Image (cartoon, rainbow over all chains, first blue to last red; front, top):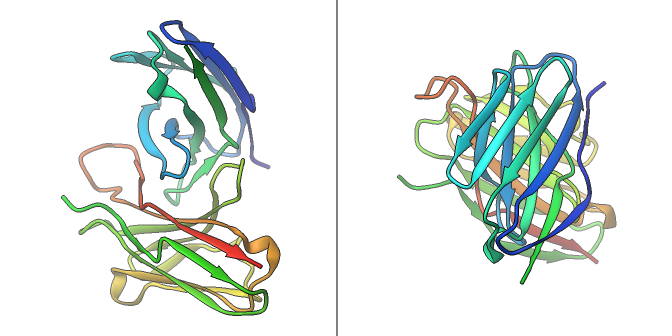
Length: 110
Length: 117
C-alpha cells in the first residue's frame, strides 16, 4: 500500500523558522516533491529530492532520508504570504506516477 | 510559455446531472493527469494519460466518470450522473518526463470547482 503522513495544521510567527515533516511508506520510490498550494489555487512546485540530504533554495530547504522514509520542508524568515498548504508527494518508480499526502496547512501570524 | 488551461473555473449542478471539464496542457507535454481534490485533502489521481493512451485509471469511478484525450493533446473529464460526494476541485496537470529535469515535475491548471447540490 501507499501511505504519506504529514501534520494537518501548523502555526508559526512571522520571521520565525518552521519545519514541516513528512513520512512515507510506498512500494517503489523515485524521489519526493514538495508543492505549495494557496487557498483556492493550484499547487506549485517547490522542491524535489532524490538523494539523501538537504537541498537549499533561498528561504526554503528540503531534506530527505530514504532509509527512514522521512522528509521535511524548512521555511526560514517566515512571511505572511507563506500561509498556505504544503503538499508532500512521492514520485514512484515506473509510470511517471506521483501520489500526494493530505497536506499541511501553515498559518503565519504577525 | 502558456500554462495549463482549464474550463470552466466553477460549476454548480444538481445531483444526477452531467458535467464535463476541459483541459489543455502545456504544449509538448506528453503526460496529462486529472486529480480530484476534496476540501482539506491532497489531490487524488483519477486518471493519467501518456499521449493518448491511459497509463493509470485505477481510482477512476468508471460507472460514472469517463475521460478521453483524443489526439494526445487536450482532454475532457465527464461525470454522469453526478453525486453529492463529487463536490470537489478537479485539477488537471501535465508533465514532460523527457524534459530538462530528470524528475517529473507536474504543472497544474487553476482547477474547476464543482458543487453538486
